[in-house]
Every structure is written in structure tokens, then in C-alpha cells.
Length: 250
Ligand code: NAP
Image (tube, rainbow, N blue to C red; front, side, top):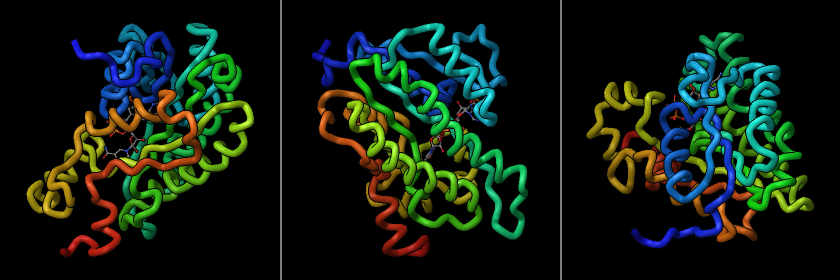
């Protein structure tokens, strides 16, 4: 077996929210392969018996419940990955207040409240890294998905402010902004648009896979990024640059 790229990760502990499936599950697998003890989490749609910490991140009480469960498992946390997210697409004209609130609770409020609740454990860790999964749509407009865009833009802005506030304690706060990574969240949309047409819009010529995000996370989790905080790492095959330059019609 080849030597691990980031050996300092071995023996550390991480929480990955929303690691029951999709991007979170893939990132949790990659961290485990790097020697990290990973606490996995899913919504109450899952039974705790699946080995997950189960909590609903759509409410502050659920966030507190998750923080308590984490504290019951470990006395230090080296890495927090704020990954859980929802997408409830609607144009402004059809925007439903409940869907807007849910999107903002899960995608924006929960990462902030969870990071706050886990500060004592992060202070006790040696990695001291928080990574939030935002989106290219924290920046690039997305007609038909206004609540999601607002939630991700908020999380991106909050990431930079948390980085400032937590830097004196040696806690680094960064984000990864993925482009289109094929998971349950977008599989139907990709098929509806037509895969070939969609891939023609992405400069690197393909929809991303969960594995495409692994290098960015391992870097931001490890000492290799020890002087990096308040940064947004775009992992999108160039998609956002093409969208900004040409729109969807090129
Ligand atoms: P996914 O396959 O739909 O998985 C979403 C994860 O979030 C699941 O683990 C889900 O748990 C959890 N979750 C959702 N609502 C929750 C709640 N109320 N309480 C607790 N957990 C909840 O989505 P994904 O594609 O892996 O996306 C992961 C993250 O990446 C999201 O923040 C998403 O916005 C972001 N992202 C994705 C893409 C992409 O192209 N896929 C691009 C940019 C950004 P359950 O299994 O229990 O439902």
C-alpha cells in the first residue's frame, strides 16, 4: 500500500454531518481510509442502529442533540465537516415560506450552531479545522433555486467571518464549493437536462464524482493547509467559470 498523502490525519477524530449517503458518505469513507475515526450522522429517517448519530438539523434542538451525542463519543474533535444540506427548488414567485425556512435552517443555521456547540471539543483537538460544503451557487445565480442560493451564500460569508473570529484559537475555517457532483440531490436534474448536453457545459467535460472532492477535504483537514483559513476551494471542473462567462447556451 502506498504511504498516506497526509500522514498527520491518522489518529484524529472527525464529525461529518449528512454522511448517511452522497457526498458526506464518500468523504467519511476517504477520511477513514486516511486513518481518521469518523463520527457519521444522518437525519431521523435513519435508525441509530445503522451506526449513525441521528439528529434533525432543521431545528436548533436537533443541532444540540447532535452536539451532545458527539460529546458522548469523544473528548476532542480535530475536524468538523458541515456537509448536510437540502435543496427544495422553487422560483421566487412560487417560493413557499416553510421550504425557505427549512432550507435556511439546515444549510445555514445548523452549520453555525453546530460549530458553536462543538467549539469546546474543537479547542481540545489538534487538527482544529472546520470545513463547510457550500456550492458554486453561493456565488453564481441559479434561477429556480433562490432559497438554496441564499443559504449557500450565507454559509460562505459566515465561513469567512468564523475564520476571523476563531483564528486566535488556532481553529481554521474554510469551505469547499462543489460544482455538479452526481448524487441523489441532482441525479434527476442531470437526466432531465440530458447528460451529454450538461457535460458539454463543464470545461473538464464530465459531471463530478464524490471522489473528486476528497483531495480538497484531506488538504483542508491536514497540516498541509496550516496557514489557510477563510478560503473557498472551488472543485467544479471549471463549471462556474463557464457559467459566468457564457451562461448555459454556449
Ligand atoms: P444528498 O445525497 O441529498 O445527501 C444529503 C445529506 O444531508 C444526507 O446525508 C441527509 O441525511 C442529510 N440531511 C438532509 N437534511 C437533513 C436534516 N434535516 N437533518 C439531518 N441531516 C439532513 O446530497 P449531496 O449531494 O450528498 O450533498 C451534500 C452537500 O453538498 C449539501 O450541503 C449540498 O448542498 C452540497 N452540494 C452538493 C452538490 C452536488 O452536486 N451534489 C453541489 C454543491 C453542493 P438523510 O440521508 O438522513 O436524508
